[in-house]
Length: 326
Image (cartoon, rainbow, N blue to C red):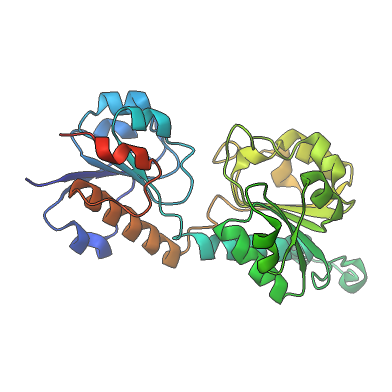
């Protein structure tokens, strides 16, 4: 029997060999559209991006689907308990975007600390100006980087930051001081203490009910005056109104954002008009190398599940003995 796979985005031709003998279809409308899921049909496996919602109603609507594979780490757009209850396996690709996302977080950090956007705007505006005297960029060497979350991406960011001469603080209640210390970092018990000491704070936690708006007005008021905030994780981690207020008051020195609560963000958003904010459209993990690893992992795991082989990155392992039959 030929397996049937549906992909939210067109599958790159370079992965055609993996799909030999598999019927493949994809969404024929814009990614993230309310109608893109209309094309799933009788697919048994789904390659999912982060923009559409996959919940119990989706599983009920498409009863042939046995496995949903995310081309990335986050599964906050997949209702995992609802899928588990219906016997649908959920997989992700946790290793694929690690390097790219970590590099992007460091890129945003350096860009905001060195006031790259302001300098770029100044030279584009032209005119006779004393750029040397006006420039207020800083070095990161000797500064403190505070990591909120110390998973795959956070640990790689720490490694790069240490090479730049930074001292790294870590807040991650799921880890022990020994684990953090073995990486040459300092474990901090309270998030507020990390915020008060760090010159740069970088977020690396998933979006859950517990972490939504974890950076709010109260937490921003704890941050070191003039500190910088970087978010390459999920937009919902930060209260955006409070963030704007912290910038307007001068509490923060700048912000680097790759993610927003609503994506894409409205271009007229006040944050996007500021010279102390550098923003990118959720592409931290979207380098060519990273995307190749995502596609490889998602397709491979989808086929493994359909062939009865347990995928290595099964988010809901309890579903495996009860995988939906077709």
